[in-house]
Amino acid sequence: MPIILQNILITVFAFIWGIDTVEFQVVNVLTPLVVGAITGNWTEAITISGTFTLMGLGAVSIGGASVPNYGLAGLIGSYIAIRSGSGLNTAIAIGIPVGLLAIQLDILVKTLMNFVASHAEHLADKKEFTKMNRFLYIGPVLYGLAIAIPVGIVAFLGTAVVKSILSVIPTWFMNGLSIAGAMLPVVGIAILMHYMPLNRYMNYLIIGFVAAAYLKLPVLAVSLLGAAFAFKVFLDSKKASTANNVASQASAKDQGDDYDE
Image (tube, rainbow, N blue to C red; front, side, top):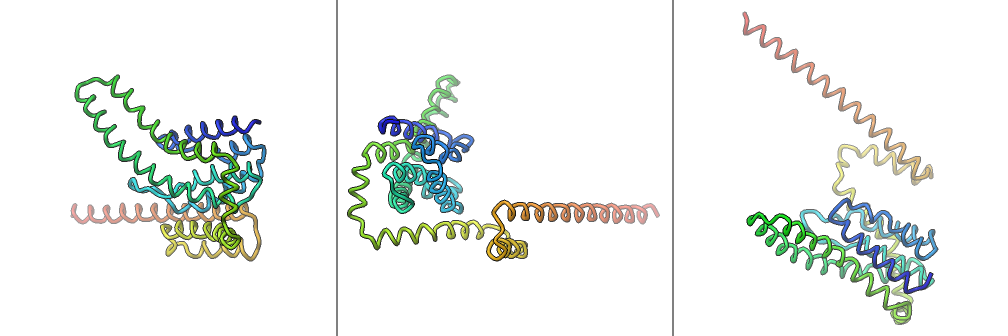
């Protein structure tokens, strides 16, 4: 596939993905498949995209907060790394800065959306609902451009620019990026665990850690083990709830009998 066609396809996909960020938010999952189909290297695309996904597990945009876009970093990082024949280090060196810079575009889009929403309310007050619906399409387009613009810029600059950037990066820095790439997924999982009720379920965490680290069970086996424990917790909570309801009804009945007397 010609490079120019690859660049166009990856930019169009980025635009569609940006629009989906305000809808179902499922297109991001297709990133490794799309990158693999465009570049022809499925294994590398899945590996790099999966690494960036682990990095961003704990980075959630709550309450309109802007966080580093690790999905965007994985998209452009895996695409450029595969196209230039490099590996994960190159993906991190390119993807992470783009993901961090995307925060500024995200803030800009959210600021512009205030004006879009305000004008849409003005049209609604005038009962011009057709114009309002058409005007609201600006929102998804802005979110699509926020993703497509950085991807298009990096993609259309070509591998020559990427290689020139890599040529000035010292070896020690690339080694540091390699170490960071191994540590960032752990940081993402740690952030995610920070918001989980570990005080109540620490025993299950320990069991999962032993199963993965010492028994060397695959991810699927550990997941099935976790699902079994989750189902047990659900049944126990259901039994406790039923027992509480029976006790409450018995107490209410006793109080009613006393009142009748």
